[in-house]
Image (cartoon, rainbow, N blue to C red):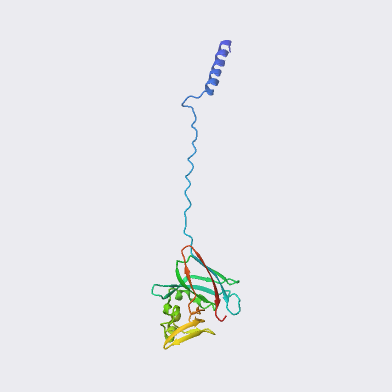
Amino acid sequence: MNKVNVLIACLLLLSLAVGCGRRTPLQATATATAPPAPTPTPNATFAPSSALKGKLMGAESQNPLSAAAVILCLVTADKKCSLKANLVTTVNEDGSFEIINIPPGSYVVFYDPSGKASSGWKDIDGLEMILNLDGLNDPPGSVSFEELKSTFCGGGGMTIKRGTIFEFRGHIVVPMEGGIISEKYGLTMDFPEGKPITVDVQPGKVTQIEIKAWAL
């Protein structure tokens, strides 16, 4: 190879090297653009649920009624009472219990230390207490003793707890203190001061109660 050819080859290589170092607009590489950060959405707010917390203890023994059931009975507009099988819980070893997600309202509190009710929740759900709660709450009552026995917890008879006191005014019975038990379902309704044990559940509030089971 003569000197002229070598010189030409060197010039060509030099021009190629310079060209590779330059970028034309067509050769410019695109810069990746990061997607915009998502706009944070506010946390959804939920209304706090209403709940009932309490203890179920024997009035005489002072022992917790562990494994007993507690069930609520909604007081309706006509002053009757409808049992709610979805508002039920089991008492813990220390006697404590809790029922959550309770619709606001007034409830009569029943309990079942026998275990009978738990085998028949389907039958109990919606069962209406055919008795005049006004009569029980505000003596003199308006329920006869025969009517009370035949209708309490859907009929099937009832047991009067030891030490229970009723006052009879003609054919009208006025419960003074004590409790009655449904023989069919085992549910107990106590009325320690002549009134069924009731709770008023407020929206978003936790209601506290302590039940002293009559004659236990």
